[in-house]
Length: 492
Ligand SMILES: *Cc1c(COP(=O)(O)O)cnc(C)c1O
View 1 (cartoon, protein in one colour):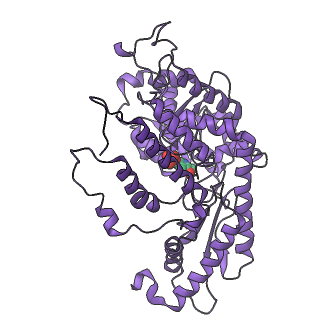
View 2 (tube, helix red, strand yellow; view 1 turned 135 degrees about the vertical axis):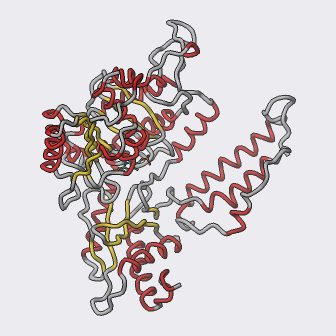
């Protein structure tokens, strides 16, 4: 039982608490140092789940015991994105430096909504670094948020202010508003959600087709804008993608920026993982045109390897972002001295008032590793993706299902030409078998109606040996599933 000093929640015996704390820290160092000895992922046993169906504890428990529960029942059953074999969805690997910084931030317990404090200056330093990285002017504003989903939403809201003026804050949208937005069919679902949440509705979203490289078809974009203008509608927002979630395609950003300027439409770039390709010498040229965007949404927690969560939104017209969100309230009154000085505050640039110190783990990551090293990690993940592509192309039983632009490879097992099983089911089961094996963990997606095994190499720990292990296990499980069709999920 944790003995607390009278009245407070602090320990009565700090020596004891310190010892326990150090062992917790050591356990996490051990976990990260020895990740490779573990499976990437393992299914949660039923009794473990049941362990977290307990009634609300009224009495104090023991810290060491809570720690033990965490080590035995939580840590081994996480999704595994810290592991080098993790290749599912787009998840960053995190770093030990980020972990330590997160501990410091939690100890300080700063509220980054605003006020006159150095933690806010750390976030402002981060905003300056982001501006520098993306070649944005000094008048641009930036804000840490949970993730790109929220950053996309903020992009839509600021663009809505640009289109309708500040009166939209008071009057909202007229019934049957005339605003229309544009994004490719390959864009992330959070773009459509942002339109829903902004009250604009997805009926106002035009889904522009893509070319064979999964990039937005700019001629179709121009036609859609022209058709809407001819119909008396008001095109206001283009969401281009730098690194689509399915295949890692980059929309033709420079051409889209030309269209946006000509048509006087806001250009937002969803660069959730791809935007940080700017850090890598060989990827940055592919992102040309992004520097002309009105807003960019991206995550430090994906390719930037910062522990979750650390999304970011950068807006060229900082004053417009501020005027979209800033609200007068007596308790948020500003002064020129004292703790209420230092306006504007981060809370003036978005919907969150209380905010965590995400800037600290991100600052530590850049300060300790340096931008070049992070860029090299990004380049390396792309090199591994090219290696995987080459090996897929050299393996007759496998086929590539999409071009490899960055760090994502979509392929499938196509089987021997004689037997033609249900390839979608077979490949879905290969993905499940890979995940359950703990060897390598890709995810699945559907491309042109075909189920694809999708490997997104995001983790700085992944090596060529992990790619080899993925391929070997893919072929092994494919053979086993074909020899034993009863193993296929459908027939189970
Ligand atoms: C991951 C991702 C998102 C969503 O970002 P979150 O940080 O998960 O909110 C949006 N767009 C793209 C292209 C993504 O890859």
